[in-house]
Each structure stands twice: as C-alpha cells, then as structure tokens.
Amino acid sequence: MSTGLRIKLLRAKKGLTQDQMAEQLDMNRANFSNYERNKAVPPGETLMKIATILNTTTDYLLGGSDNPNRIPEWATPKDMKDFKELLEEDGDLMFDGIPLNHDDKQKIKDVLTGLFWEAKQMNKEALKKGKQKRQNNE
Image 1: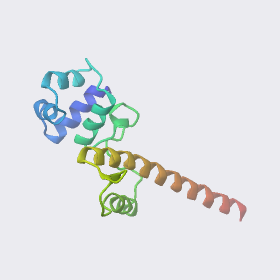
Image 2 (image 1 turned 180 degrees about the vertical axis):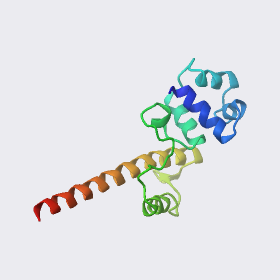
Image 3 (image 1 turned 180 degrees about the horizontal axis):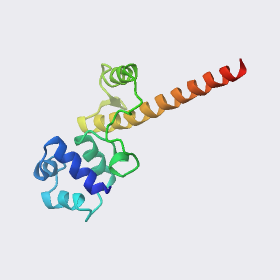
C-alpha cells in the first residue's frame, strides 16, 4: 500500500477532511491532496506532523510496518502504563534552561515513543533468550 493511500485511509478513519489536514499542516489543500494521490512525497518534518495528527508512526506511513498503531501489538498493559508514566512526568521540558514550545515537545515525545518501544522490545527479547538458555541448561 502506498504512503498516499495510508494517509488517506487514516485521515478518513479519523473523520478529517483534506482541508482540515492542510490547515493543521499549514499548507493549502492542493498540496496535501498531492500527498494522498502520490503526486508528491511529504518532506520528513511534514511526514512527522502527519503521523502525529493521524496518531500513527512514520514507519507505518512509509510502509515499513503494517501496524498503524503507535503502540506495538505485543505491548502488555504494564508496558502501556510504564509508557504513559514516562510521557506524563511532571516538569517542563527544557533545552539549555529554556522551556520548549509545544511543537518541540511533541517532536521529543515522538522520538521518545519510538525509543521506548524499541527498548521495551529488546528487553523482552533478552528476557526470552535468558529463559530459553536457563531451560536448556537444566
């Protein structure tokens, strides 16, 4: 499935129009329509914004994953609780002592989302290998 079709299907699922998407992306409808029709490829930063609006990942939009959800299918309720706590920690996010604006905070949260789930998956795989190794040694 193409990037444009993935964007179009998720946009429709969320009940958003092309005009609404274009407005949130600070562009005109024709430009956004070109993305859905595969006439143009969204630049990286725009693709990240589209993924955020549609509550998905850039990996899904680009065809690297067939899971449109931000949360992996293997995540347990405890994993999701841990992740929620990570993102909801109190305190301002700052860089060099200056509070970050909303867009910059969202970019950091998007990066943390990917890193968190990647680390969680690596830990689960390591635990599984450790259990298998112990079972083989018994």
